[in-house]
Image (cartoon, rainbow, N blue to C red):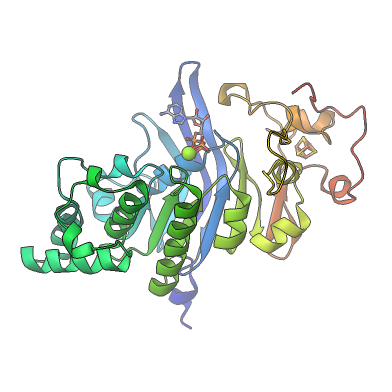
Length: 343
Ligand SMILES: Nc1ncnc2c1ncn2[C@@H]1O[C@H](COP(=O)(O)OP(=O)(O)OP(=O)(O)O)[C@@H](O)[C@H]1O
Ligand code: SF4
Ligand SMILES: [Mg+2]
């Protein structure tokens, strides 16, 4: 294999995003690091507000107005931080494509779906009108939309939620991107349809050799769909590595908390599910130390003043915690630990 083929498709290093909030400027991504090779699948997981969608938007050049980005995002070696808007336009939809949570945000309600798939084909791949229509049909068949030929001229509101998401996936695939980003692509769908759409994404990604960045709240989805996992909290990656290793070791207290809080099948109706005690802190309240300190049962004084550095806990597996050894013993944390259990 040549050196170029071994190079990651995407390398994100010390990515920081500052946003304006009602409490002044806040840092919403705080030094994110990860890489993704061609054909690799990476999952971002974490509670609401930890920065998953902002990471996706940063990679698409679609951050909110006034966002300040620093650090590095290299795509095939090319730096994306500071890229002019016209270059982002060329990259989006062509090399990097995104599937959002709610398909209606990605579709134009006023245009037939066939036209919405054909447009990027004409724009990015230079196809003529009838060629683009034929290719749109092929794509709809590829995403297994029932009666695809009849539906080319249908409008989004004439389709079910699951069918609309298949159309969005067809648009994303139209220009054969190298990287597909899917941000909670099935949360708006019912459970059976969720499974079908995730299976479809996995199949298409494997067939085309695309890299996949999948965002989900659901540990079960991650276990099945991605080879590597990055657990996010407070705008940082707190634990990352091969999915099986992250599940096996769960080196970071936050990963353990997510796992303990996962919904379980087979519990009697109405059983209260465990949650991680406390709340996700507001960005403006994050201090110099570990973002998880207020909720962590292992926290001690140093955790509030010292930012934990990424530490290797196994092959290709890192976690950011000052007390990795204590957590790894599996012993119950001290009763007088600094975590806030008031919930
Ligand atoms: N346009 C914005 N202006 C100011 N703050 C924002 C903006 N968008 C997001 N944020 C803040 O940035 C943080 C990360 O948001 P983000 O949307 O990335 O979370 P998320 O992990 O995707 O959560 P969810 O699981 O709810 O989708 C949150 O604290 C959020 O309030
Ligand atoms: S032990 Fe300290 S550093 Fe580790 S997660 Fe808890 S608060 Fe953060
Ligand atoms: Mg989100």
